Each structure stands twice: as structure tokens, then as C-alpha cells.
Amino acid sequence: MTLLEAATAVRLRAYVPYSRFHVGAAIMSVEGRVHIGCNVENVAYPEGTCAEAGAIAAMIAAGDTRIAEMVVIADSPEPVPCCGGCRQKIAEFAAQDVKVTLCTTDGKSKTLTVAQLLPGVFSQAHMDRV
Ligand code: THU
Image (cartoon, rainbow, N blue to C red):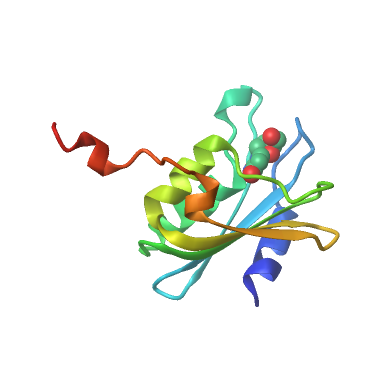
């Protein structure tokens, strides 16, 4: 199963009674395993979680450590951009040159590196004086 197929399948399991916007994400870890996530909303809206965050949590829970590649898919007119918070979450576990492919259900896609997704990322180096 490709990463796109995995993201497409998990997207259908998104829990989205409030936005009705289903998002699926799949990660290939550097350890060589696929991890998936979908968005899970909550009646207390800020408590909802994005598909990307779910896939990262699944990767860490499975014992893998780093992202080698990632695919995100949603039913939107243009490839859905990850939210700001997810860009920072992805950057925590991926090298700057890792590719993140953003897809629509009707076949459009856009591939960005992590560096392009989050220029000027806040990193451990910024705390060097602590
Ligand atoms: N969402 C994601 O899961 N990933 C994205 O990249 C963009 C937004 C979710 C959050 C919320 O459940 C719904 O999409 C609408 O914002």
C-alpha cells in the first residue's frame, strides 16, 4: 500500500461532526513503517486534533522516531496546507529536506519540503543560551 493509499483510507475514518472536513495523513518513518492519522474533533472545538498530529502520535506510540516522508489528503479545491501548529509538529520529527505531499481527493498534489512548509522554524538551537 502506498502512503497516498494509506492516507486516503484513514481519511474516511476522520471524526468530523463539526467541520465535516475529513483529513487523512500517512507517514513513512525512517525505520520503514507506515503510520496513519485522521482528524478527531471535539464539541469543545479547540480540543480537536489534526490528521498530521494523529499520524505523528501513532508513529511515536509504535516506537518509531523520525519522519522520512509524509502525505496528507483532503477533499478541497486545492491541496490542503497543514496548519501552523502541525508544521511545527512535523518539524520536530523530520529533517528539513523531508518531503510532505499535500493532496486533494480529485488528484491534485503539491510537494513541499519541511523547510518550505515552515521557514524560520523555532528549534532547539534557539535555546542554546539557557
Ligand atoms: N485539519 C487537519 O486535520 N489537517 C490540516 O492540515 C488542516 C485542518 C482539520 C482540523 C479540523 O478537524 C478540520 O480539518 C477543519 O479545520
